[in-house]
Image (cartoon, rainbow, N blue to C red):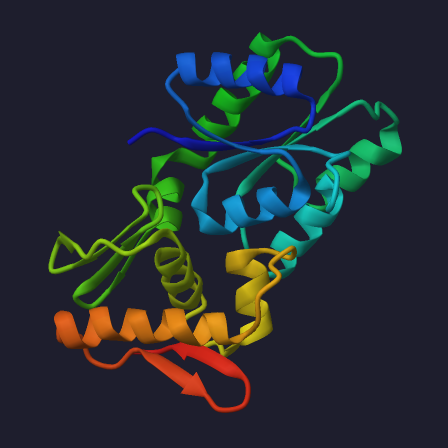
Length: 227
């Protein structure tokens, strides 16, 4: 299976150059132009995240703080123009796997991505991207939810919502938290959107595929996944 790499860089010239080299080397690349997009992409499931520290919206350091606070162990490589020792120390203390200072060559970045990929290994990748819960299987790499091995063809938001709940098994997530993590901070709708998507998920999982009830309402708060 190809390794999924997030490239979060707001400089279009750097972004396009790195995408070209990463894809030519066999990596599957998703791009983000700001910190909010980067957070959504990482939560949806990538193996390695290349993060420009100076991203608009949410900077790379704050992304790392947020992810580690949530228990997310995605491999992080910081891209930055900051060469000071204190910035490198902060990056590593936040759980960075590597730190690349601009200006850099695409080949240097590619070599560092390869090195991190070797360190985390295929076992880490499989453990992060594939979740089995009885008859239900959630494959973040393929963005598929399968019952008895068959893709149940969820829409993108439905899949992201199910994956978020399932990866936080037994934890009650508020509607506001689900909106932030699945729809993003700039979402201008309301909490009823979550309820609509939950109804659709329940219909598919329970009515169409006869799975036991697994998405539970936490009254006055939100939802949790428990089977």
